[in-house]
Image (cartoon, rainbow, N blue to C red; front, side):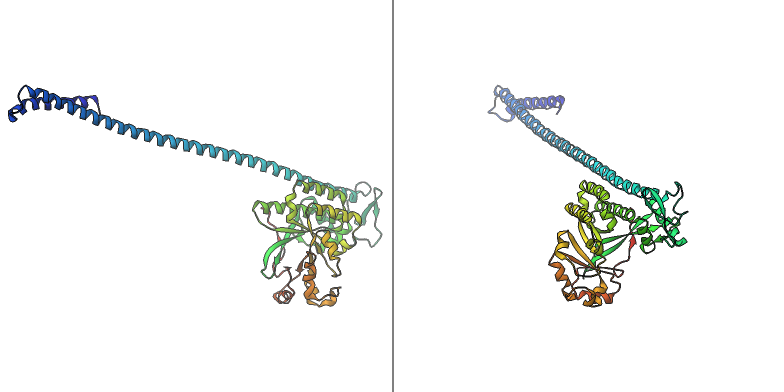
Length: 412
């Protein structure tokens, strides 16, 4: 309330008191003209006091409202400041996590590139050896040169390994695919039974020619074995499996991959040493990767191979026995070596116990494996009729064209 308004109100009180002093004696005989001014003064003072009390009360109310408003604003400012600090802390933590993740990813990439570099160097050395014909000639130009002994190229006898133009062409495609990174990975699901839920994927290599034609192992594996290129192909497959695991981890997919390793790769202590160093810095890969070995390779493995197998097992890797030709197995020994799967052809069960190489009923095979902590995978299940018969044996997992053929893995 402004000062002018207060002055007007006080003046109105004075006018009221004056009117009271003049009019009361006229209408109230008991109030004489001498007493009237005193009464008028009290009226004026009472009105002024009431006005003052009212003004103070109004001022106090407004002060309280302003203080409450200030408190609310202060509280809101404090909350905004706290939220800002919290957001700043979250941003800093996120940046630190990104920084740590970036450093970890860079470390992983460096390690993976180191592995790939080792593969390329190994392959290049092999290529250099094969190409040392009189210091210059290439294998495609001299198809009978298939080995190097004592640093010198040795000619194969007539009727050697590379007999046809087709062999030469396929070998050239394989060599070029390894040099130019045209080794693709195909994935085939391994499903749990009877639910048919995808649980794992087996990885296969396919060679891609310059014109896009896809060549399966059946066309090149024999040549690759004779020319010592199987390890390079296996190692490239292993590198691709690591990349697959990285992608599935990024998308929070809970799956694992079976990767076949040849006896040449497992016996290569130098490569196993590099791989062990790599995995030691990336232990999260071990639960997502199962190494698969052929039965004949394990049964005839020399001590150095068994030692490399133990080094992988110590890192937490688990193994699968593949290419099973008989079931006369040392199950406790396999379990002790960290084998967790035995993969058996569907025909072992469908053609009767005579083909199993062991005196045990087919219905008891799963119980026999369970006793030593081994899961049974039945592969090459091609149709529903086979599956119906196989389910009677209580198998754990199935694989075959019935559940999905090998498909090219996505690179995104």
